[in-house]
Image (cartoon, rainbow, N blue to C red; front, side, top):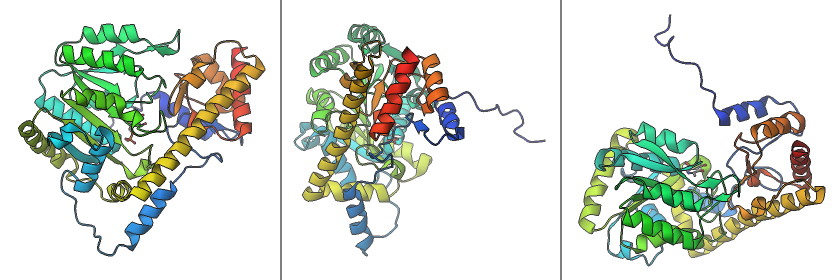
Length: 402
Ligand code: PLP
């Protein structure tokens, strides 16, 4: 006789069902490539050395305490995070028309941004790419926005459906919000070129759409934090408004610290001041104030030029390991003569590869080879490690195709 006997059983969640299938597989060679966390060559989670160093420094600093942070978080963290994405010389920063607040990583930044928009933006339609990160529709729906999709990925070319994307954005109502992944698109690994970004920017501005950048992988596309910020900076340079959800989960490996920021670029200092005060009213009843530890780690690293440099080197190390895994997997498939064009594996960018495998093939690979990926055919390249694991995957794909 529970009050909750009419609560529905768990829905079939494609990501969770892969997780459970992998967890329950007793095979010693099982390999789960469905996750979005970086792994070392040994298949282990990685804590960056520079993060360890920052944590030691923080632990030795007896002047630190555990007081609440302000509603908008650590001020230094906010300033440095905004500079990281906008560029230290950004006119928007100089003109003091940028609002940045520390949030619970990328997800929390998207959620706070969505809540603000649901309250203060007239047009409630928000467009996300098809496909997109599975949490996007959940976050925006819960905030009360109405989620629509724009064409993005073309399964035939395993690349960008640029024409479809422009057509769909052209047809969006004026004021509609458009979620754009700043780089290293999840799940497809397909990003627009800079020329294409420029065309997207022109269209977004001419149609008066509101860009909401999801910047979860800065540094993970090219290995350079500045190069990966180019698309966002292009939009900020034209003086228009945009939202940016920023995460340090992937590029600093701070997943469980839940550290990120929401930046809102406004057209004037006055607007920014009002927006700031209203964002605080979104935060206050939700979680009051954000956690200290992750923000302190990021701030320590961004503040210190030596540590910043060490970070960029470790970040490049992660990215080059992923690029090398792409190359090795591609070559392994070539060597087996696996039918089909697998060049998408080396062309795609960031942590994931969208293999083009179908659900039947994915289930076959799970059953026969104990390798798990999401049912859309996405594999985490960062989850691949030693040569043996790579060979296991190449054999599995070859067997599934032939
Ligand atoms: N946005 C995208 C596209 C992602 O892939 C992820 C995580 O996988 C996130 C946002 C949010 O990550 P976090 O909340 O850990 O920053």
